[in-house]
Length: 313
Image (cartoon, rainbow, N blue to C red):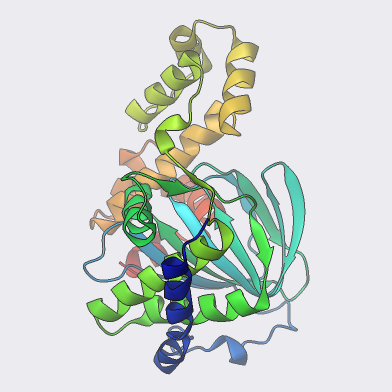
């Protein structure tokens, strides 16, 4: 149960909304109130930011019309908002049609994919939070044992009041003029969302177990991101047949081995792009046949091209 002191802090965070509104909610000179949500002819628009001096945090805002995401998962927690429009998305074994003012909470490893559910597309605001950063925020903010992380009971939460608060916190975090402003917005955002949507659903990440064969396959894929791994390689690691290897891995991770490995390649590509490595070199370093091959998969998972993502660094 959330304590009285924690509830009071949530109320204090709500009062922060007025400050956040003063910072603004647009990006790159565009305010979403100005976007034409009635036209399917508008191109996809995205903005990715990483707050200065804040490791393990990435924010994004996007208006998607033509984008279709392939099945993938994030290595980080995803807390976000479907702001406007309608998004058709599969997650946690169910198909959803998500409309405006809906909060999104995804755990690391939650498989999802989808696209527009209406001609006008959808607007989303997301914060990607590293597991260790989330653990620190939750441990300090909720006085829980170190390493405790939230385990949200569902993915989508229609809540207009919470959406209003999130929109302001996210606007401050995405466009904050100072480190103190971004730190304050991040702490407020996490505290309000976790405090309201997962007040008694905390878990220790070490409790998540998988069969030894699945762990061995996963470790092998992580250790050989740049390689063109074969199914025979994974069968040797798992000690199982081809179909057993694929089925067991998918049952416990949500993705077949090839899709999981592709996601690792994209994650590695993101890190290299942020470190300044040229895009063409990144493609070779993470094991893609060429730059166009990487770009196609990168956009289908990240939602923008490698060049655009790199430009936001």
